[in-house]
Image (tube, rainbow, N blue to C red; front, side, top):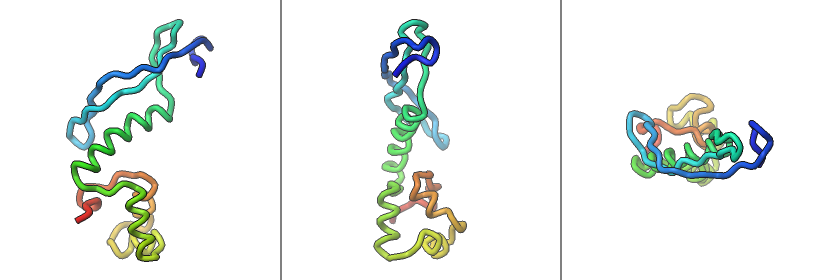
Length: 113
């Protein structure tokens, strides 16, 4: 990767960080790039997704919310479409599909018990 500031070299760094998600603090490893010439920090969409997924994963584990692949597997087990699963669960028309694609369900919608 090249620096968006100078076209020069960049270095991937990490540091401990804290993020508030749904009114709770979560610790995670913040990844970012730093331009070797200007020392400016930046991230990419991919790095942002990795950073955020660390927090999402902790939240899912803490509250027993299934991961997207588990959500999809549950639906496939019953051989239902995502829209039919949404209807059965009383969600909006496309809500289940959004959860399968990684959107974070509310704690009430996401409980696996």
